[in-house]
Amino acid sequence: MPARCYRRAGRALGVVRCGEPAMDRHRAIVRDPRICGGEPVVAGTRVTVRTILASLAEGATPAQIVAEFPTLSEANVWAVIRFAAASAEEDIPLAAIPVAG
Picture 1 (tube, rainbow, N blue to C red):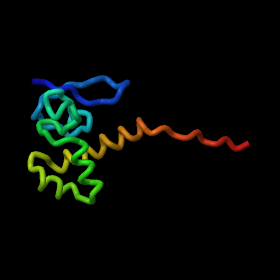
Picture 2 (picture 1 turned 90 degrees about the horizontal axis):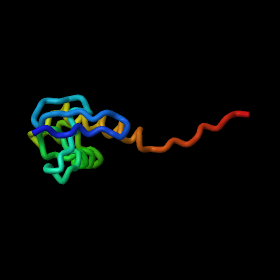
Picture 3 (picture 1 turned 180 degrees about the vertical axis):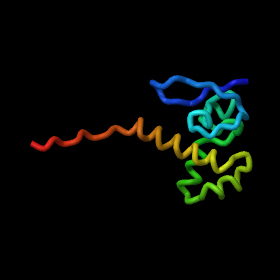
Picture 4 (picture 1 turned 135 degrees about the vertical axis):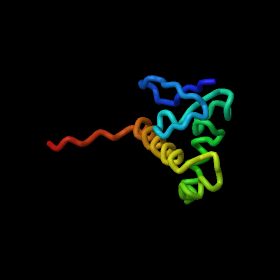
């Protein structure tokens, strides 16, 4: 069953099939209301983006995360990092740049 590709507002939605290998952050991260309550997860798994980011925040390396979650690859972990970076870039308001005058 296809799941929607998780992308921010203003970007077209793509479609991926669960379990399909995907390394692009827009194809590796999916949302499906039947999986983990619709939280963003790595495609083909039940591992949430939040879980991976929390592990990284606690100091785990991508290799350690893969060892803990064997359904993941290091490429999946890096896709989550790219996804989070892009999400932060879109969500964090930037202060106005002062104009020298």
